Length: 387
Image (cartoon, rainbow, N blue to C red; front, side, top):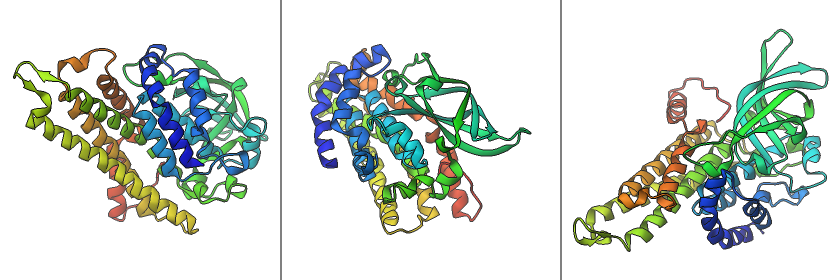
């Protein structure tokens, strides 16, 4: 069934390309696009089978995201972020899953994981207050996942958790005015002293150990993968897709372009050909490393084996390198496109802006991920929730 999702996504691409500028102008992707993605099954790829999901190989999900982002960067980004949340919810206690999907298995969640709010332990759960930024696709969701540091009654830090809240418990502040990923509608979430029951929380200590309460009801290998691996590639994959879209748009343009200054066809310029080859190699390298790592992670999980820490660190190393490779490729293609590529509405400049906006996500901080890998290789202790 998951293969049919990829086929359905391919059929959506002309419409997504046509709506790309409208998404920018509206600062959100359209309801029509979200409905089409839902009907194609994108949001069910990582959902448990017991709720009608496909429990697909994560590489199938990433392939769908890359394909979508190659048509519209913002739509690819939202598809990736909203599409990975069913996987994370599957790690929560079963009751939380029933709360969200019991009446409607198509219910969607947005997120903001930076622990910018305050959570206090109380009887039966937590009191949560704060403002969270960058909740992509929140206009198309009715639940939200929010990161928070848990404090005891003395103000001491006792845990770092994800909190699950229904839309009745939060408000959305429309602040998304940006130069890139404009169509993602990544607005702020505001919570004012709301009670969150304990079963609607998930500790990052559990996700780091790959031992989560949701595995009691979702025992499949998919739900034994590290959060730091699955989520980090959720951010890099749409950037790979944007680079892929920029590459195709560049080829289409260069085949027709005439360089008036030199009186020749741009396609015949050997320097332009070299830049194209360099960009293609960078994009391929990013994707091939993703394929290799996801295959290795999945094989360990399917065998019931503990996933080796060196592999988890290598995933983060090559995830940030994959983002960097694709940014370098997009830059090279943009520079190779000439002045007309600056025109508003052209796909190359949109992919360029969107890719750089995606690069700004915290998970793409190269020095942090590379330093962790180096420290691990040198035998030093490393602790990070995103490995």
